[in-house]
Length: 250
Image 1 (cartoon, rainbow, N blue to C red):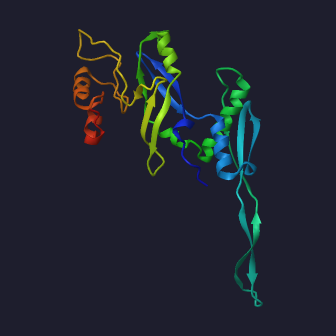
Image 2 (image 1 turned 180 degrees about the horizontal axis):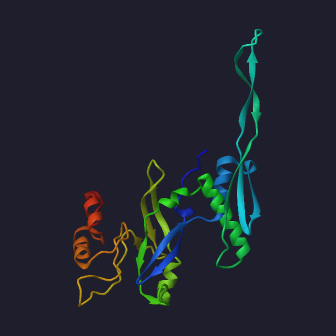
Image 3 (image 1 turned 30 degrees about the horizontal axis):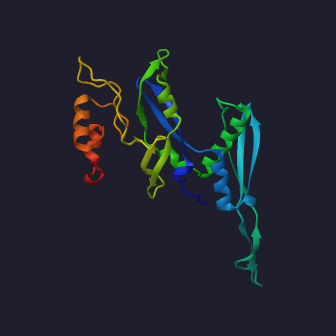
């Protein structure tokens, strides 16, 4: 059984890690998407969910009715088996389970139940293509909290970080993401052509916190300047080599 790939409007975008001068974006789905795709693919009457607690952790299982042909052997008078004949269809419920984590916002228990349901959906293959997302970096001003943690500095950047959406997405025959376009609430594209917010250093040729728009690796000032002038966006040396002429933004 194979479920269809997610459409752009079925994918949500949220902030992942916040670092020194940047934050990452993660793609995810909500539980309503799983419900809708299950209804669409197998029918509302042919799937169900269940929850159970195991060693203090909440698990959710999604069961799908997978009918199979019931057969019986055909025996010749001499006792030899001629084959099998179909005598009807029989229901068979197949279950896949996974564990959830508590929500950091709002109702923790409800969030945990929803998360376990979405993860069980991943086990069935619903939205599993999101695991093939490229690394997504957005440059912005951040403030250091401690040695390991940062927060977004400006209120406008905080509001913007909560407004991203997937505008375009394409997949290959292996169900992997091969094209992804993310924009903010004003329609400004932030990936893959992210705007770099970094000041040039007078002491070094390295720009702090400038990253390749394709792979997310750190890029030097010299490489970044050349890339922007030739391709219209920041690309590391390796990604420049892989850039095809028809992909160049003019």
